[in-house]
Image 1 (cartoon, one colour):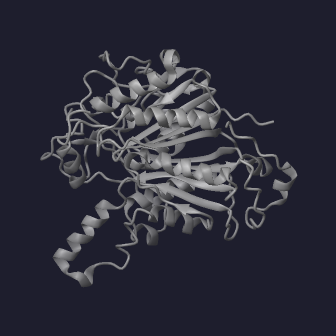
Image 2: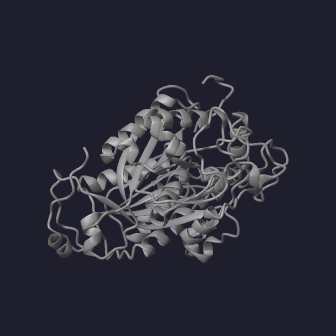
Image 3: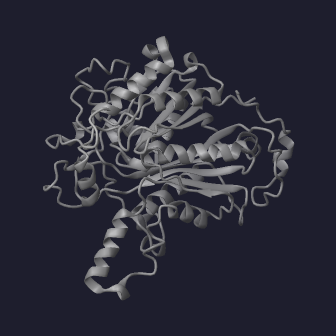
Length: 450
């Protein structure tokens, strides 16, 4: 994510699948007994998307809001934020999980699991995916930054106030980081590979990238992949405040998240989830699935540098690996959905990394940060921003970086300031960087299907 903290002030081409489409048509999702030749590297497409976010529940509401340049950031309503330096957040407002989920699931789980289930349900419905029976060819990969921290703390309150006998048997499975993936798997009968990246702010992108690899290698035909977090809690605000990571521009919350602007002063904590349905291209074609875009490449690196501060070098390597994996050169990329946290260090490092990777092409790229509107969704950020990237390609419309008013000499790219832009996008990157030095980059491109 990249912040200045008290710890430190420094800071093959893949070959398309060769199997005949007729083979795919005969393979039923519910049976899944035929395993493809793992020597072949398969193309992977996005067929469904689901979102829970501060700017809307559902993909349509999300896209309409961010392309209009509307912020979802406001004063915190979940608790009294007055004691804290940062009193603002991107909350998912007017969200009643009982509208979407059975009561038995809601009362047994933390909100980060609720968000994942709701986003997954929308993605599956949008993909017209029928998981009949128990499919071993459908997997789940859902990342999270911290899991059910609020659930941990509320359970501890019960322990202190009422004693051990009052602690629910569902408390532990309701908070574990891997249980978002677990519940999505259980509620949809997905019996293939299951994974849960917990790489902080890069968890969503890593979860998608790992799912992409599983399909490429032929381990599975379909993956439900994304990220989720629900961390707007006094303790979490206190943690990030101690790191001096959060914006304190409380006077006008909607203007607090200002990526790449000279006056930026930290990120705004947010919550939500994003889930994508990823499929082998030929499998998707065989069942007549909608195809929104193709995942073309994935790059994952470690900085090996600092617990909280980002390193330009790690970001550079991750972007180069992702481009090489996609078989693309820098001039073929039209858009980057930046990590763009609105912290002084991250935004400068990311700008410099983009300039190093893209060279003279960097100045012609459209680079925007949707965190300017959503805030930072932590482990869900990469997944929500991956969906924004797919939608940008699909609609030929780049969402803006709002609140960009004072240029910074160290951040000198085209950040699509304040207004969405119509342009054809052939290929795009979605960047995520995290505490611990994780850099996860996804490359999406317009799906070209014969």
